[in-house]
Image 1 (tube, rainbow, N blue to C red):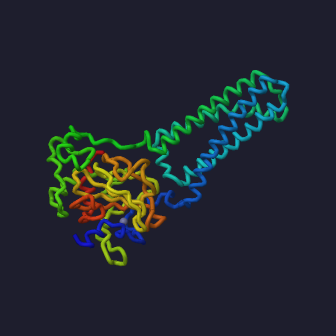
Image 2 (cartoon, protein in one colour):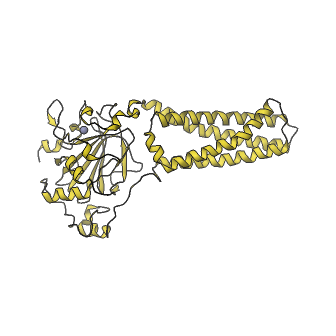
Image 3 (cartoon, rainbow, N blue to C red):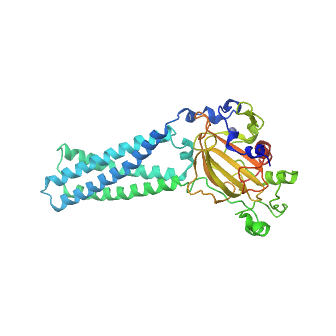
Length: 390
Ligand SMILES: [Zn+2]
């Protein structure tokens, strides 16, 4: 095992400039990748969106409390005034929610618009927000009339607006719940466990030490081999790989890609030995095979990376340039094929204008040495595995 082999899976295999033009993918032409918003702005937008939650709940709650005071003491003019102040903050929050929310949605600062559209939770969140807005029409016009002294507050309306305000508080709390659930990819297109016989028992009987959570074999498939201690990929190994692997990004037909395994990188000093898959920033990256995470690694060239073993522990799968990891992913997470492990980005030396997944496969003699192995071109494997269901 020379240094040369070691480098095959190392982040050094990734170099600027990435030959994005050689991998024509529609994602490159979407406006999404054209709008690269700096991290600072993304952070500020997310912060303002969240800050509006505090301001809005505070505003609508104080409006409700002030209206309650007004009911108790109708002669107190300050109560209505306080209600109007709370109402103003509530309105400011609504504007901030809409402005920051629409900006994040359409400028794709966080995730591509398709991510939101596909998420049921996003639909729930939007529906709740619409209900809050609809509930607000009558109270805000009524309060505006009071402010302009076009009509006097009467007890019945004051009581109604108070109740509506509390209902809106509860709805906003539900929106917050939908938002945090969405951020953790609940209810979205999440991992679908492989559909197969008694997979856990098979895995245990094959190699308990391998800590493979699930095996994608069917009863007809040959048993998954043990780690072999060699980097030589036999035809049986490749067949196994083709059976257990699936495309790590949704909606991309591997046949439309080109292998760039043999391209020279680093000024011609070495081969790329991986497959670049262009995709909009934020596209979910799924575990291409069941197995386990070996190492969450970060390097100057590869950016945020995941090294994972397949269930046979004969292969190391490497994913680089991630925008971020999936929530809760650790160095020892067991993986089901299709499980979201992270999101496409351009960390490391990838061009910011061409977010992509750098995906590498290596035949490993010992997956504990996760950065080593004999590189295998992922492209024909993925093409061969095209029919594999997630
Ligand atoms: Zn690459």
